[in-house]
Image (cartoon, rainbow, N blue to C red; front, top):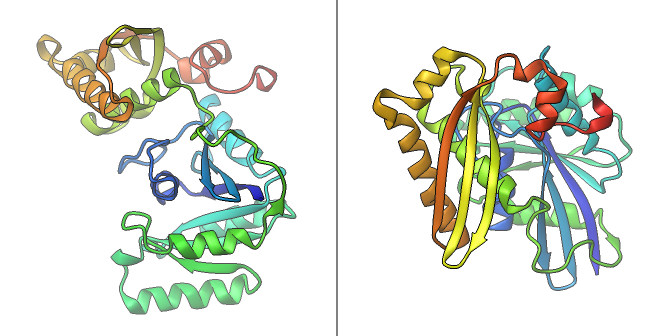
Length: 295
């Protein structure tokens, strides 16, 4: 059978997570309209008869001084090593090519790079033609595919392009495995997704979620989670007046988890202020970010 690993790279908010969810027809990565939503490299396993492709969704590549952002950058770049192909996602609505070109020039790999021009349904024909002309001149040897991850347009072209670079071999994961992440991780991410959806400005990006207790019981799943903020003022906003905001976040997250797992979920969320957690190696590791040897 044909098997291989494929890494999905790109700037923040270009549609990488939407793409991997579309390819798998299952939600393995949270999606919001805000940048820097994905903080971890997440594997999604695509299976067909005689075919297994392991896609790796990565944090958006961007410069950041804080330890958290540096770990996200390392996670994304680590995913390049040893893959059979790289899908580099470009936002077709952007008129600034410099950031993508800076990243593309910094990628050191022998793996083939396939450029995916996403969000083409939001671009005028003239802009798309100019975009393609620019990248055809700059990167003539890279394969280029126009897609809309939101509408599933171009997914067959992606699979065809990836297939050309796969090897014969045994599957890496059993057929029933969809992702390398466990259920507590998915619970944490779904809660964070709702924080991003309900709260504005910098607050969601200065929050993390820690799963304190996760139990499968007769009739469902029981979860205790702590939402971590950096400032007391943020904590008050997350809790909301009479606890209304944290209730909204909890209820929405519980509803999404029940849809995902097809079982009853009891979710209890509390909020805690942990000043400086994004720059503290011990706190970052406790919250599940980075590898021990990276600190």
